[in-house]
Figure (cartoon, rainbow, N blue to C red):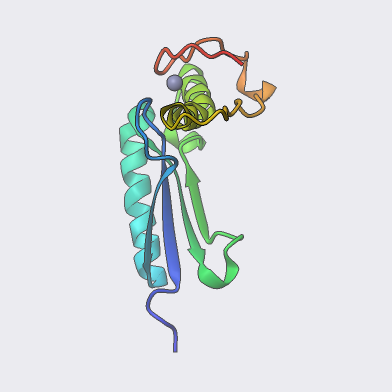
Length: 140
Ligand SMILES: [Zn+2]
């Protein structure tokens, strides 16, 4: 007998500057049908919202085969119908905001630690000095 909650839908969201929640993701468990239906709803919303969507990806996975999603859709898929400018703005924001939120947390807790930004891929375009999405100044 198959168990009812073997499948997991994971939705990842973009962080807003100033939020303090770390990586925001939402996970729901259910049957395969539940999981696929839930992922479908998320993708429908993400595609409808276009560039303004804060949804970045959705995955359906089986607990026994976690590394190979049955289904995966991304904000950066061509189906999202973003312009090059919109893709670039989202890439830059996603690249810097997690680190900035982490560093803001370190600063508040008086930790000496500061995280640097991850590697910038040249495939994404010119390395930014300011975020086109939120106007944060980006210094290495
Ligand atoms: Zn930004």
